[in-house]
Image (tube, rainbow, N blue to C red):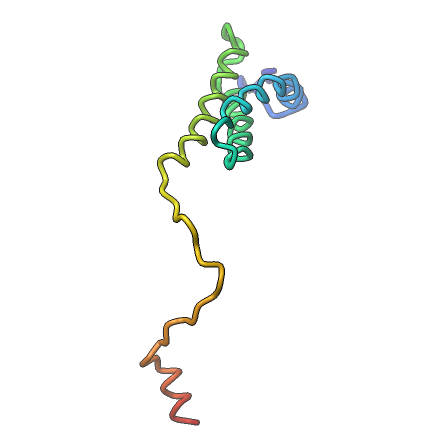
Length: 116
């Protein structure tokens, strides 16, 4: 999985590693999504991104590489899950449009009124 550059390159090898990791990544995603079903797609994408980032930047020749890659995927998905807990989003936004504020005193509007 290492090229002459010393790091894992995004080639067929990386695609194969990601394909072999799918069952493990799916288990991680299922566990992280419990109670956060609205963030399922965000968590899933962060799990895969965390795995690929670790595959790219960690030492793949060190012992327990698979365990380290899976833990990196878990930590990335967990960060995505915690974002919702830390950010207060508005409850409901109005669906209808509203009348914009009148820009009184704007030169173009004054000129338009003067011409009319």
